[in-house]
Amino acid sequence: MSDRRDYATAADQALANDAEIVRRITAANIEIVADKPLREMLPAAIRQWEKLSKDRFNPARAHPDTAQRLLVNYIRHAKSNYDKLLNAVDAAGGTADDKARLRARFYRKLAAMYPMLARECKVQNDRRHNPSPQEKGQ
View 1 (spheres, rainbow, N blue to C red):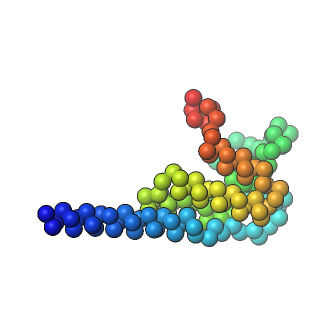
View 2 (view 1 turned 135 degrees about the vertical axis):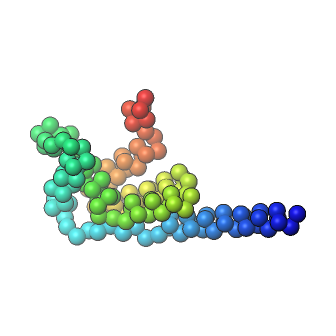
View 3 (view 1 turned 90 degrees about the vertical axis):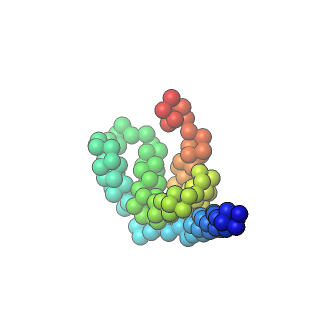
């Protein structure tokens, strides 16, 4: 009987430790490198999009909000520790809610740093919580 209790106690402690790790990760400092004005980051954001989409960016056909979307995506993946923190939450057994809190913190910080991206940050964060039928693959 003692072995079962010891195992249960050890398992409970491991879960508590994992929860503490996730809490620390989701509370960690989100680092965003703001080394250039947005207009100077846009070419790199477009190149990143072209590399991922294997298509050419055509500003004449692009929706007016496209530049902001590309900039938010570029900064999130290339100019911050967002991916590292999100991967750490996954590795520590974090939940979807843990990841959502981290995402929301990232978007709030980015919007505060670059107010002209605030609307797009809200759109992207909201889309994560309320995906359209097309985004759900329906």
